[in-house]
Length: 244
Figure 1 (tube, one colour):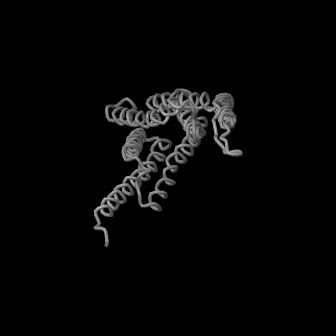
Figure 2 (cartoon, rainbow, N blue to C red):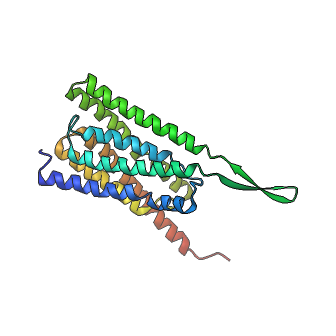
Figure 3 (tube, one colour):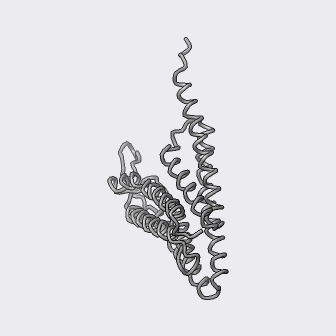
């Protein structure tokens, strides 16, 4: 089907909208980092991984590879968001943190260098170099069909690893019997984004789009079911009468 048909465009735009919700979800975290002028105990690794995912999928959507406009647009925006988050993390990670320790009855302030900045900078450089290598090698040595296949398989692997990451949260919910660490609207947005791009890829007959997003849709549905079950269990437990 033509990627500019009304149904295809509608599915792609819906996927873009729900993806923007996900891209904006770390804003409260970074608002806290900026207010405190410190990254505290937050990890910047997820944003570097998300940047790599967005860059690969963006390259797949470009005219030199698959030429899928709405995949290129959403992942270009995603890469910009992730770069901004990584830049903020690097800026505030070099702030020294004050740690108080008791020594001979007095509190002594000890400045500790935050090595997270060095690790994050190394990861960012590695991601940008890897992406540059993918772009150069695919343009220089591969014809367009082979280029599409290579970048397509890379994007599938990247997307599946991204969609699989909430499995750790699901495991945590099951172990703790609490949905405290599983925000409902974030889970819903992930499910709807995957569903929209699954439909978009299906309408385009592009299995590099609909296979990973189909897996993401299934995992998102499981996440919502787990949320529904354990949120109801939490409510039931809270209404049980206290035994004397």
